[in-house]
Structures are given as C-alpha cells and as structure tokens.
Length: 231
Image (cartoon, rainbow, N blue to C red):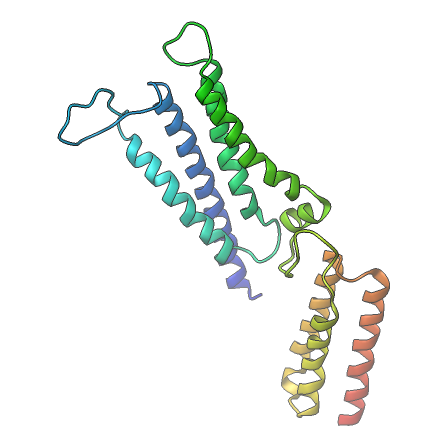
C-alpha cells in the first residue's frame, strides 16, 4: 500500500472510531436523560406537552443514530484493511450499553423511594440478550482472530482456515505470466506481491510453517527458471 494511502486510511480509521465512540456515548447519555424524567417525553406539536424533553435531546439522539452509522460505514469501507476489525463489536456495544440503562433505572426507578420497574427490567434482559448473544459467537478462537488480528485476507468467522491454493496460484501466475510475455519491468512488483501475499497468509494462519516454506521454494524456483530462460 502506498505511503500516502496508508496515512489517509490510518487517519480515517482513527476519526471513524472516535466518531462511533462519540455516537454511542451520545445515545447512552441521551437515553439516561429521558429515563430520568420517566422514560418518555415530547417536544413541539399543537398540543400541550405534559413532559417536555430535555433541551437538545432530540438532536443528540438523532445525531447519535445516524452519525454512528455514518462513521461505522467509513471505518468498514475506508479504514485500514488490516489490523483489528471492530465493526462487529458495534452491535454488542450499543445494546449492552442501552441495556445497562434499563437495568440501572429498572432497579432504581426515578421518582420512587423503593421498588423496581418490571417493564424496564424486562427491556434490560432483552437488550442484554441482543448484545450478549453475538459475543458468544464472536469470542471464539476464529472470531477473536477475525476481529482483533485481521490482515485483510477474507476469512470465515467460524470453521476451518481459508484454503490458500487459489490465492497462491494467482500470485505465481502473475509472476510467470508477465515474465513470459517479456514484461521485465513488472517482474519485481509481481515477485514482491507474491512474497507479501504468502507472508500475509502465513501470519493469518492460512498457511502452516511447512506450507509457507514450500511456497517460498516453489516461487523462487519458478522465478529462477524463468530468468534463466530469458537469458
């Protein structure tokens, strides 16, 4: 990846993650503000409002929802193609944080000296399941690797490792094809691409140590033979 593109994507990754964190915080705090006055409010309209919303809350909630989705899309599409892929954690983060609000206010309802709010506790259970169940599948060995140690190589979340044969053959095909056509100028780039591709597959676990060693020998053997033929 060119240096300029690497820097741009790094900046976008940082900005997008900061935006998602801010959006989640807005929604968390905005929800608490509404729940602290009973859980419902209204603003505007031709009728007299019994419980007006705290100032700025509608904009905060809308900004949190749509802003969060926008920043999440930027992170997923324009962020770094390697490193942690935290997109899958956005759903649990949202529902577990909002579920905590339901639990907190369900055990300590506003305006009541004692007792609990069964309806809010029910919502806490529902939101807890919606946010917690995905973590069960996410925090498997394959899920942890795909989330926190991704390298840009397409992988399945569960199941066996990705078969490297097609990608490796494609990389070798680029080397052999361009050398055979006499495009010597492109040979170093293709050779570097093949080596980087194999190293990425090896680092991700898609290639074992023995397979990685055999792949390097095969690549070096092909390029040496083809260079000999061009002489």
